Image 1 (tube, rainbow, N blue to C red):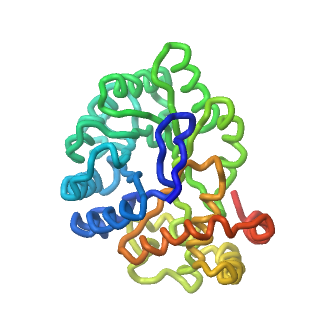
Image 2 (image 1 turned 90 degrees about the vertical axis):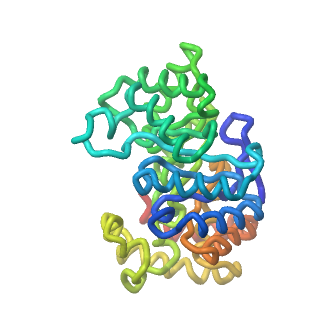
Length: 326
């Protein structure tokens, strides 16, 4: 395993990390989570990603129970969570969902700490932007959580470059804790934000990236070329919004064209896609997902593919995917 600094912070995270979206509680129980986290940890993975909204808080409970069972030294692993969508519907309170106001954030962190059974969380994110709360209120609340010792670093997820820039400069002006990282979607078919929109932020404020969906929700594994397989993410009712993209004829044709490139490198299609994402030096860590141990081991095999992505190979991948990338 290799390790990269999280932006300009001193924190180092594994190039590949393990996330819990979709899988924990829905597909993976505490026993399986502990087994996969242990296998990932033994392979050098030190960052495990979560969010309060995942499985309505139960994903945090599963991960927290697994961590307790594994009994790792606290210095040896990094965990995250994200705030915005909340756990309850609007009927139970207007300040419990789709907000980043001070009231919500200061209580959301306590809920996550309780569910995960931790004294602090390493990384916390504003899971989406909130156009209805002044950005100054959000930045100060996140900074205060850090000052209280409930978290160590904070950042954003799927924020615009202008909002990240504004948040950073507000914190800088007032002496508050600055946002360190952003968690954007990044894969061969979704590239504009990471490669274009955020380009100046890497040098201007030292933004780090913990990217998600490197396999485009499974599209880049090739499993959707013949439709939606039973038991796949695309077959889940709560993931129905993904199906149009997963079944795109153009993208699946491109996936077919990537397969011989992967074969020449002695890699699976998924390993090629993961390695391509990790090849970008702006990416601090690539968050992977797995519902079973065999998937995890396959994903970890991408590490051996990164150095095989020569300029010539990258050019071939670019020719196939760039016309379809947004």
